[in-house]
Length: 106
Image (cartoon, rainbow, N blue to C red; front, side, top):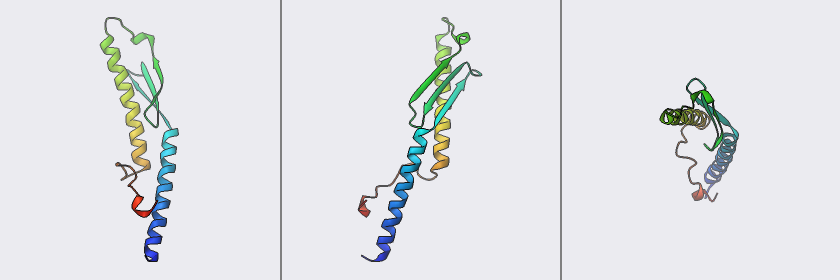
């Protein structure tokens, strides 16, 4: 195998390292979504794990639990959208994740 293969292998290794670094950066970020003008707030981390929930007592109506449930879903979806947008900005074109570099011996 010629030097072309060695160069491509080195480039693939560098790409793999950059991808791993970006994944770690994304994991450390947090995103706060809200609904109902801030009545419900949720914070997730870069892995979409829920880390914090804040519910304003003014939106807790025992006769309208469904409304509160909708606010909770909307707040989570808002935070998840922010997370996805950041991920898409940091890693454009890599929606499917890092390709398998096993064929390069990595």
